[in-house]
Image (tube, rainbow over all chains, first blue to last red; front, side, top):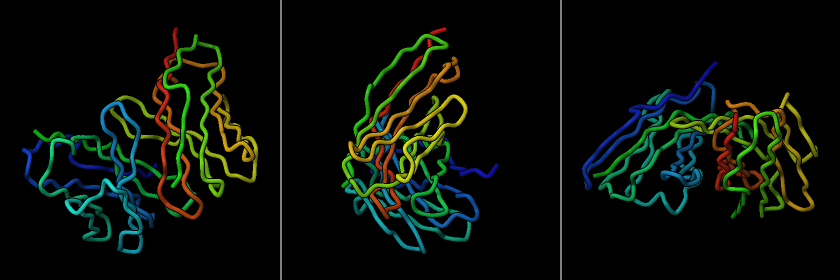
Length: 113
Length: 112
């Protein structure tokens, strides 16, 4: 069964540093997303990406955040100048259309120290 | 934007009994309602979804009901088993929108 894969599974970084979280969405999907989940809380939308551009972003996705699809398979989330409050589980997801099942990866646990 | 509320936040059920989790949503234009199961250390996994043109959908021990007038939908798990223990999230996207707005989650514990 096709799946969304994320690397690394756990990333520890010092406050102020830059991190890149990587995702390989399901190959024939067209819509890509990043969500985050602070420990014990609900899953929150960060950004959606379609047709090589951001289609929507939340207020969490400030100018320190960026996404990129550098080639036909990878989808990355970059966070610059990381803050302690960026510590969370980050999930990548993809879907073949709107109003259709979104498949989630296993997540990357980001710890900012 | 869409606001999704979910109840209860925790639920303990004796093995073999039924569990019901309820969600309400605010955007009357929403037409797709998925339920996700999240096991410890894993990403959310879709277990069932329903569209606004039907009132109920069933898949083995899991069913979802939708009341569009009242803007609420519920997850029903019958004959619960220990492996049903997890956190369950409802979600709703605003109509025509790609993103999912998740509920706050229900931690379901099945007592053997």
